[in-house]
Amino acid sequence: MNHLQRHLRVSDVHVSHLKVAFASSDMKTVNQHFGSCESLLVYGVEPDGYELIQAAEFQVVEGHVPAKVTSRIEVIDGCFAVYCNAVGEAVFRQLMTHGIRAIRVELPTKVSKPSSCDHWRSALASKACSSGNISCWRCR
Image (tube, rainbow, N blue to C red; front, side, top):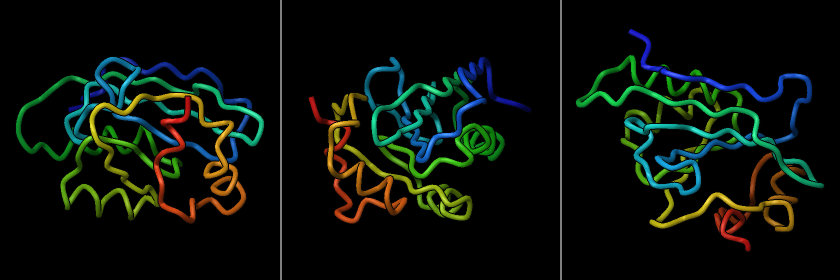
């Protein structure tokens, strides 16, 4: 069973240097557990800016259903990281096998401008933020 309800792909033409995803219920705040999130936002980040690439909404299903995790991983495949409120150990390992880092953030963390932050410039240069700091998405 596919748990994906809606999937908007904004752009397939331009390939971003770095793609990051956010687990959200309101598409403004990182406030969801990855495995049961209502929606995922995928942004492409460049040295001079960022753009929304995809927005996906999922059916909310209670319990541990492997297919719901699989459908979420398929949406963010190719991302450098997913920012979420929580992620289980087994799903964390699944994400790592796809090359996706799960980064847990505290509530409330807004999805906001990354382009002016040195951490993202570092991540773009090496595909990894050397400091491990997530404050990049808290820049205002």
